[in-house]
Length: 210
Image (cartoon, rainbow, N blue to C red; front, top):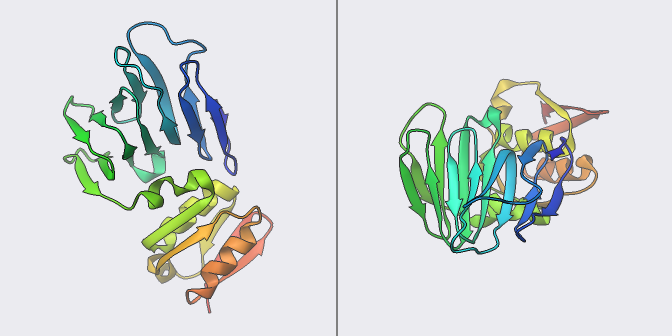
């Protein structure tokens, strides 16, 4: 299943597991699960509510490692340009295995970050809404750079963003924003909280200083 930039999709797998796919994402899964585990392959971002099965674990394969669970709710982000895999646990337990076989067990409210530079796995406590709010149309940013926010905007609204001045990329924002059908509404709220102006030309957005 391929979800293009600007799209979202929700589906139910054959075992009852519910999956929400974010924009610019791909999920490979069988029509029916067979064998001793339930296995899928993800590129991009997805939120999983896994149907519990004590004898058949559910496995999500990413570009760097895999997540193994019995039944739980969690978010996985694996966009290639982000150069990391981020697994965030909402409830239950998940076990993450990196490419070398090292693993860690997550508790609810925590996430593990696996980077492409081969560093040790990073485990940290997080504000869950920052990482799973997208499923319900809410974006929560806490001290995010404008460059980080605009990467999300590019994917979710299928637009191309450019900065008139490099220093604008490092401006930081905190806040909760709804995902509007119209990207201009979303951008105008960011304008209200910072020294930037968004110039829209079709699917192109140019960011200029006020």
